[in-house]
Amino acid sequence: MAQPFKHPDTGIYYLRRKVPPELRSFLGREYKRSLNTREPTEAKALFAEQWAKSESAFATARVQLNGVTVMSVPDIQAFAAHWYQAELAKMEATGDFSRWIADGPTTGWESGHAWGEHTPKISLRDGLNDNPDFDLSAEVSKLAHTALRAKDIPMPKAGTPTYEALINIFKEHWLALGDIALKRHEGDWNAMGLVPSRETATFQAMPPAE
Image (cartoon, rainbow, N blue to C red):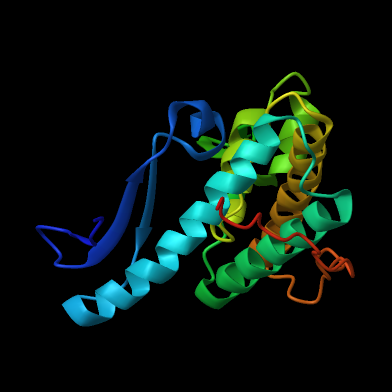
């Protein structure tokens, strides 16, 4: 019978399961979740709960494998908005905006015998405007995967309309986060960020197979 895995260094218990080969494009090679406890008795109870979640995730992935759409566009909008608000709150609480802005082109200046350089900070959107051929899809996919993973939702199959909608919606939320990060970095705390979506996720994970 499967048992919680105890990390040899931290002593924290985990659920670890190999993902069936046919589902790895959705869930990766291993389904791993921390149980956030070092107590064996508590770990067993939490393990059962996480095991049930993993079964639902596997069942959802199998449905997606057959080409069935399990997330609607409103679902995706709701998940992206939740991710955006969480990241914005974290960014503003820490005052660390570096993850969401980038260095712009360096310019030089000369005054008399003095010479200097200036490298402004720019938003990701500005960077893309300067280099429109740059493809963010892989990075956006990672962000979306992390957001869905927190909800135990497998990524949609690449190339499907649902996947394309997911990438486009999360990309716009990422760019909006970069826009407000630049404003905050420049000292503007009055600028309003992206208006949160009023959509409510109606997604329900598939029940485990009998």
